[in-house]
Image (cartoon, rainbow, N blue to C red; front, top):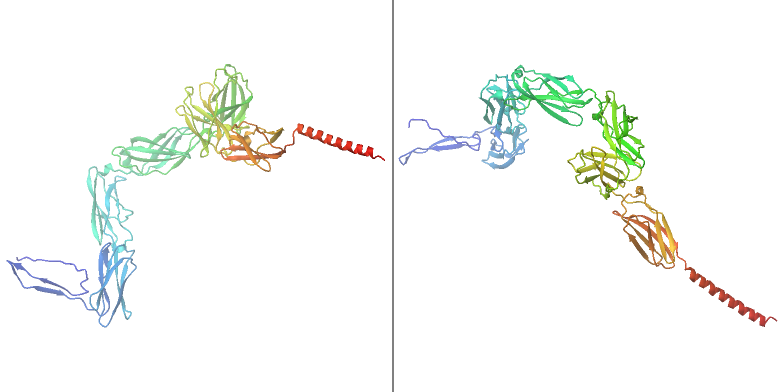
Length: 636
């Protein structure tokens, strides 16, 4: 009693569009006062009008627009322009008032329009914009120089905002003039101790406050080091130094990462110290280009890594070459010592040449030596097969010679108690060979797998495997389909390598094309022996598993076969006197191939021929005798 009371209600329809009435009465002790009515009449316009005007509404809200048509005019239609929202309905309120209800299910790209037309061509329109209220979240603040704060947050839904409803940001009460992707910086003193940091976001659709509580002296996001240079450069290490643009960094306990990259890989080292401005990088390759960059963070209360410095390129100094990777191939009376061409990361400069020295292992005298040009990577030696030899190979560049790579060539005399190494078959897959073998206690320094085509002269290739592995995947850019390879697995020992296993196979077999065999036919009474020359390995683009011999005359086809790939003859028996065609094919995993044919005619046997001649002679004698007797009787 005696105070002012208020009541508020919002109509879905703008108040200008139609009359709105409200009745009010009081009630006390079950007695009610008379109704008191208040009416707010709609407006009457001389021109066509639309309400509400220039509205800013939230996406996913519903708004009703009304069109007031003056007397003497007739309503035609209402529609949207530059907006693809969902029209819920249109409704006639009175003869001169019509409404359009729209669900704002998407954001406006700019201002959108509602247009109302009369039947006489008059029209009017109003603008509206659908947008989002502030929806930022997750405020997080830090400092970069200890004299300012930098805050970031999750922007949320903020796209296509018209400048009229653009959001305004205030950090610690100061307007953020340059807001990019949810970031704001302010010059504020940073002191030790935890405090509250506040960001205020506001637009016509709402206001939001975000808070972050932190001690920013424990959230230092460092700037990048400046002027990174190499103060000292050696063959296998270098020293870096840099400077700071923020003087307060010199009092911080820092941890710095040095990222070292080359054309093959990258590595990161860490250094620690107060106001750190230098670092040493070890284990580098001589005469090699490296790209180096540095970033730092606080060691105590680590927050995050700072920015990387610009990358600088540094070339280490030259050094002697690395030791060569050496192997050997023994064939007939020759021993070929071969080595892999040093990579750029191993040569440490241009290779000027190689030196090969050899001597009998049991002798201590001066070894034989020879120079090999830098373009060659092997040397053939004539060695005494009854002696062990120690071979040493070095590479030389402008800085000197590498450490010698040593290999022992064993004597080739057969040892009776040494078991023979058998050769087993292996199938290639996916362009290479997958090998596995049993562990050998003799392999004190690992294993060597070498491979080469199974025929002719070749440049042997090899792979060295550590002692703890008994498998390898063999790949080579020189591998070819349809070519048989011989692979050897040897144990690396303190002395000469020990052969453990042999494998033979193809990367991929290919069908043998054309005629493969040179056939020889030897008829024997009613049998025919078909023989052929052994097939050279270079012609076997697939492994021969056996042979099939087809033979046929004008009436029938016969065949016989053998599963012996070493066979060189097959015999067809009990043949009739006729002309036969013989076709020999090789049996492979890809089917029959290499077809070669020849023909032969079988004649009667010698006994039959003699009998036929005797019968003919007797017949001639009888005829001649008869003619003689008749002529004698009638000679007159």
